[in-house]
Amino acid sequence: MMVHKVLVANRGEIAVRIIRSCKQLGIETVAVYSKADADALHVQLADEAICIGEVPAKSSYLHMENILSAAINTGAEAIHPGYGFLSENAKFAKLCEECGITFIAPSAQVIEKMGDKAEAKKLMKEAGVPLVPGSADEVTLSEGKSILKEIGLPVLIKASAGGGGRGMRVVRNADDFEKAFYAAKQEAKAAFGDDGVYIEKLIENPKHVEVQILADKYGNVVHLGERDCSIQRRNQKVVEEAPSTLPQQTRDAMYEAAVKAARHVGYENAGTVEFIVKDDEFFFIEMNTRIQVEHPISEMITDIDIVQEQIRIASGEKLSFTQDDVQFRGHAIEVRLNAEDPKHDFRPSPGRIEVLHIPQGLGIRFDTFLYTDYEIPPYYDSMVGKLIAHGKTRQEAIRKMRAALEELVIEGVGTNQMFLHMIMLQETFEQGDVDTSYIQANLKRLLHYET
Image 1: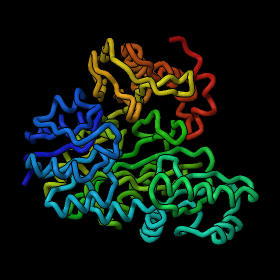
Image 2: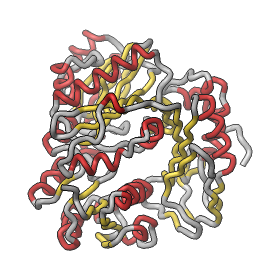
Image 3: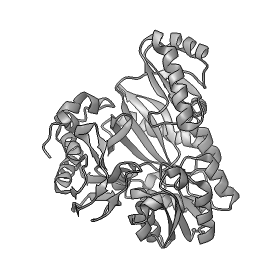
Image 4: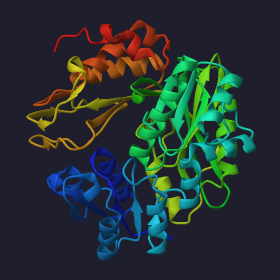
């Protein structure tokens, strides 16, 4: 039976996004907010809103007891965590279960298994999913040195318990290995409370491609195609598109591997299996046990509401479609709008929105929490919206994105709008000639714009 009331344990555009999908399903919503977000859009759109703490995330959006109390006191049967904050926190998922609250995400057991990168690699090896050469588990310094001799330089030291570029070090010289090893462990401990690290061969300048999957508790697992997320800055995605420009044979093999991975770990709900791709060979890097920031482009090319499917699955329903029902239509591109100043090392630029004009047109979507006179708080992530363009072809999607970026007006704060527009204008981008080094290699040219 479908849940009747959902608490959204998040903020910003993803909270707004979830609330809208709930409303379309006739589900009541509860927003939670810190004192800095009292005037936020998600607070205004929800049926109820509860203040859960002070400005710091640890006192509000990461405060499990306050969030669970808000759910219990409002009679919310389920919690949707969105992405970030508590979305991949196995402890929170367990607490929800103990409180009789449905967690709209995979089980705590799966989150735990796939959140440990070393454990995830072992599971993927069992499933027959291609892996980057490296350690099968967390390593000690001496074990790391042995693996280094076995797979050769360069290598990547990575935190077992996290992602987002934290607890990660590149080693190109064997003499630097020990120092980098301990630096990665120290950063991992500070960021994730776990200093475990593993080692893998560094595949230089690959494409970063992920497959969107959905799975219900009846054994049905489907994929919604792939997304190319190669355009990144400091391991943070900036531009995403679906589908990728990879050969169909490679894409089909990735779909098969992703579905195989999900089945092997008993996955339920929405998730993504992420790969790096080099010379049409692909290797598993991680599985994100949550909805992704870039999910709208998969929705645009399939016409499937991923959030609604998440809620149906969590409510005990079967997927509303089969793999054969999934039809891919055209091409979609997403850019992440951040309140930042690219010309000053992408410095955050919070402040009051004086003027806001959102572009219109067939195939244009803008997921945001902004409105005129809203004051962007300086305490959280700088992303303020996601602009999505869908066209019949990749070239049409690029043209639509250029036009939408030219029409978009956000005054009062600095944004990366013109920086994104410059990416859309590059011939190399038009040709699909991109990899994870793209922004760094072209930074000077991309910053050469007039405001």
